[in-house]
Length: 277
Length: 277
Image (cartoon, rainbow over all chains, first blue to last red):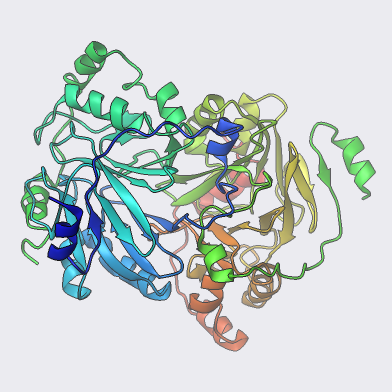
């Protein structure tokens, strides 16, 4: 589908389709120092206004990104129970939420995107076209979701589910990896079309190809960690540093209990969290 | 006590005593945009390596700051239960922890500083001299705690307790406010030498005098918020935006239950968390 057609179909939200190809890692004078600086030291203002938010019951991270000048914003992985908190923050910061993005169809919590759409006129929801879930925008690999002058690029990273994506900022300094890559971990692959092989490939080809200093912001953490970097995960992730065979063996023997809310979350998330609202 | 004497007594850790005086707020072309950029856009590398960490039972934030070049680090408000997690992170990032700082003598959790000192030879603990708690370094207003070429400055911010301090980075872009100022809230003043009058004064004179874009990183949050800014709190904090009389009335009528772990936390924290280890 051409970019022009995408724009015609969805004039209120600019999502441009471009073929994705791996970019050569940006060479920085001191990559380790650059990756670890909270402040990037760049003079140009292409970095988004950013807030990381947490929902304790499901240990989910929601991410708010905005263009500080136009005040347009996107919200990644909003949770139903924290919609009021998020609306209050958007209002206080004077932001206009344009798109509620999901990294995938979650099994552990009900997305807040449906309720947000009821409360915010003009808000669009977006999810991967491979998720099977209803949303205003069905995203493909390489799509860019614009907010003001900024955007995030979609990288399809299936394996935990078919419809998992990672959102990457324009400057490739922040990657919102959903459940594909977690801090020193990764999403499980024993339900929802999970595949260890696909997940391994997704992480290595689509996430580990990002610059080493790129921050990794996952959808969950259970140990109180908030962020990692590509370099850290390439060195210290106990699963993704293994060979493919070892990884498959680990993932096939996790023996985890099913998520507590899977039976209500998945059906709700297939309809944008509007089930039973 | 002169700076030279401080150095002689504690040669391994450089804490310099300087009289604190309020600095004129840095004028930025677009203060709101600057405050909201995660990345500051500065070319000089005076920003620390930074990690925000969370302990779920007490909803405590621990903060790791390091000089990315020398690899010297400090840890603010470590929690006993998450010491192993923090040690692992320090090791993975190749950091040498120089000082375990507490913002005050906590009532809701046991500090990890004592256990960290047992595990890391040469590590010093630090807390306000007004806290009544034992620590290697007794901090005063205006002291600077150095790690590599970076430092944080101590600002005494009593009111929640006598010994509350706020740690401010050299560039005044990050303030670790402990329980003095929380996101859209503040610490209670009904025990541990609490005083609404002192707290109001502390926040207005010592924290709200920081640049509007300065990030506020509190010791706790109970709604999944991770950070705020001075500007946001000056506009939206429901308590500190009131008059002094209104604030005192609010604080004297909170009617909160006592913290669950106060009876074990305070005695332990008075001895650097070493009680019953």
